[in-house]
Image (cartoon, rainbow, N blue to C red; front, side, top):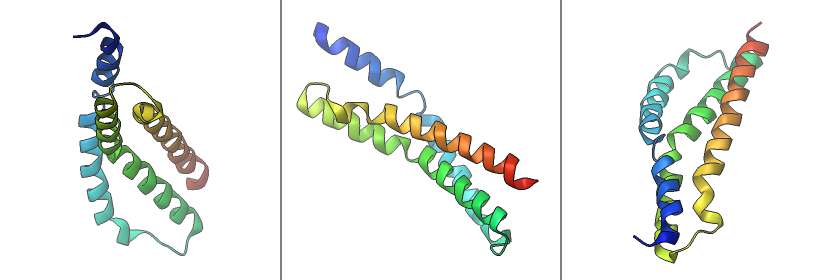
Length: 110
């Protein structure tokens, strides 16, 4: 293994860790969609909570897609560039969305 590829390999190995969580999130999203009919869409608070939760779960479930895109692009070009860091930005977006979901549950449930 070339010395300059070692950081890239470590990077992708570390960012592969959330993949099982992403797959489990898809299952949770599908189960949540089954209960979407019980939401009172006329109630703005419930609607906002449901939409934020669904977006957060979909974002968590699509992590594998961004990982594969970044991995393929990095391997194809043989170097690191902006698309290589797509998993990092995806994780940051997931954290922000999960925080927004948590806030919506606390602030709007009252």
